[in-house]
Length: 321
Image (cartoon, rainbow, N blue to C red; front, side):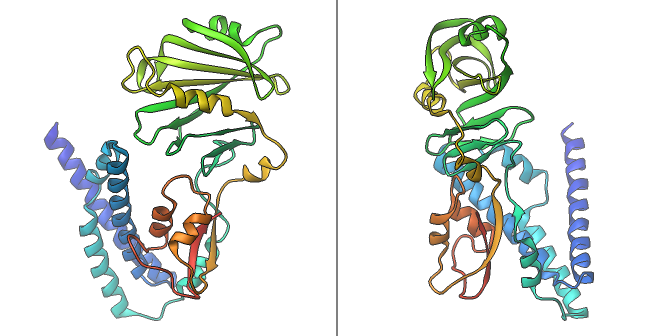
């Protein structure tokens, strides 16, 4: 099996080398410098560095990213090959269109998650279709999943899953938990969250992203929309006690109906192309950004300025708004 996997990996890597060459040729035929492919490879190198740095800082595994890296050609080798191909094409023709033309076409392109999945601005989550907003603890992030909404802690050892259920006439939050959803509750109580009927409980065992674990349950009834919001917090290493229970409760208690001003914030993030002014720094751009975690790292990567360097006055740069 190992030999077969290796053969497929090498085959995939050779295909990607070919794709890099085709990419450089297509760029040249479209009138853009093939050196842009080199810049893409440099971005891959920067992404690797950022991922490993952030994983170390957060005390989490970067196994998924390592899996991606090992199934793709080594980035330094791709970079070197791209340089050789670009130089060969430049020898044939070096009369290319300005990169500013291309950058200007990127202005307004959606960036990141959409209205369907909800939008995270800073540590505030908005879901316009569901009409709710909530706050995440420091370092938490949203993970894209096929259905529902999933948030995870910086270390990846805790998760909060949010799903919905249709309300049935006469059903209470407690009855939904015990009868409708079938959780085996250890202890629970009724309360209100943002003026909505709610129920908070712990359940003995339930299926989570980590497998079967004890969970914190927070259920909120939005009777205007006829929806129940079901929040489920769990920990990777939890056997009986919930190590991150305080975070789960804070997330659940922060859930609120969106107000008129919130719907503007719920619009998906966009990539904006602007000209740098004298004194513009990546740190100042990051301070103004709505990116949730490590905004300076992300802005540096997409602008080809990782790990250091500042934009020149008048230079077109990409920001996220």
